[in-house]
Amino acid sequence: MIIEANGIGVNYELSGPQDAPIVVLSHSLGCSLEMWNPQIPLLEAHFRVLRYDTRGHGDTDAPEGPYTMPLLGEDALALLEVLGIDRVHWIGLSMGGMIGQYLALHHANRFRSLVLCDTAAKMPAEKQPEWQERMETARQKGMEALVEATMERWLTRSFLDQHPPELDRIRQQFLATPVNGYIGCTEAIRRIDFLDRLPEINFRTLVIVGEEDPATPVDAARAIHERIAGSRMVVLPSAAHLSNVEQAEAFNRALLEFLES
Image 1: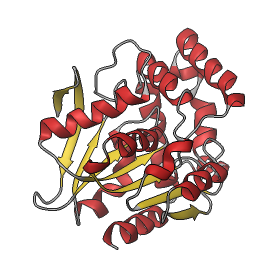
Image 2: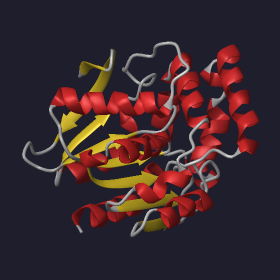
Image 3: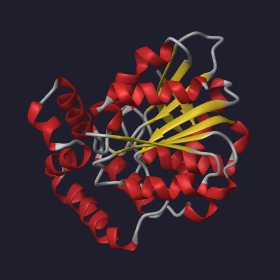
Image 4: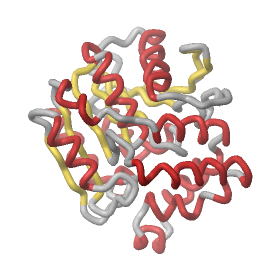
């Protein structure tokens, strides 16, 4: 369903018991709300689940960028306002975790808890040329030129070799991402710098990371965990960047244990 929020059409899905606590799912760069399919049956049994396509992704509008993390965060907040939703459990992976950090720092009163998955709080200077190269490739050659290298960052070699149906779905989400949206959100991601402010977050937080994640590695997750007092950290073996897809059962177990504790 598409609704106007913060001046754009935002695609979202709302499911689960109407009187249950609300969980918001925010996806990675180059994905869509479908990235969360492995979590939906479990979460719907316990929570009201809101998942949405970030600006520039899926069926949400993709105006020309660049975008900023505050802009992406305010999009999400506007969606909550339009839907009349007050406080939520926020679950964000990669870019979705970065959006969650922005909101936690600027709109903490809207949170019941925060789950940050395979994400980072600051982008190292040495990564900037790599991000610039990806944007230029997308601009000049389209998403097809980036898809194989992206799959190799997102998923382990064993998962790629097994070629499960989930792999094709993830690949198609990436290829369907508008170039404008990919470049706009990349600009937001490459400029994030929340690390020094993370001690301001003072509510329940879980950090999840794939043990083999090359994009936002265990050290990046640990840096977040060490700065948020009382946070928990779970490292998932045999998982790369999209740990929710590759190790869905272990991911879901850690998620539900945290949300219900």
